[in-house]
Length: 338
Image: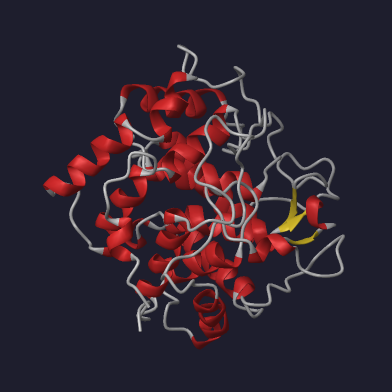
């Protein structure tokens, strides 16, 4: 089977971020390496990032001003999330302005960044995604982001947050959105939501281990216990309103919004040091079974037609999905070529 890594390392004006991440994560080149610097410059001058930046309002937002969750996939929160996933340079003036807009306009009293003014309202999938993006774009250490990280962690463990039945409590869970500790969510019929757990741990995993507060570490431990309580290849987590796992679990795509998949679950678990855990083996086997004879993985899930710019083509070999797969296999010390 051909090695897909050389394919990822090709100069590609349509998907320059795939090369950038391959250099950084698969070849482990430093950010100051000349190849890495050139690849980052290509991200900012070719492909989807410049198109996204062309649609930014001079005030720093996209599509709609203020602290709005929407419009879905084109609003400010979504755009910052996608820019980070595409490898954008957080020091760029426009991207810095977009992040500053989020951190200025979106924080609720308790620290949430989900795009809702209710102090206790939080959506784990959105909060985890935007925290991951802001950290990737260089904002770790900003007091506003630190509050958001702490609020996300405590929303998982329940520290300092009353149950949603305690109507007079100044800080409590709500029946809407995140409705209780341990990833309970109204979107999952008040049951623990694995999609929310994956996204929450994605955000917390970006905090360097030596900078994690006790609250963050407790939340990570709770998340790992939950995600490892089921076979990741089956994804049979509590399903709320459904009778079987969503097929989105098994359709790998890019970029990633609130929907998650088996591959992102593996990405998060391996990022948190579980690459050698035998409970991941079935998930690794599933991942390898989806590799094509050309060594590549297909794009099966896409937001094309809904975002500012299309990313690759559905049902065709995907550099982004292949990058994600190799990221997991590298962390798990599994060969991707025979």
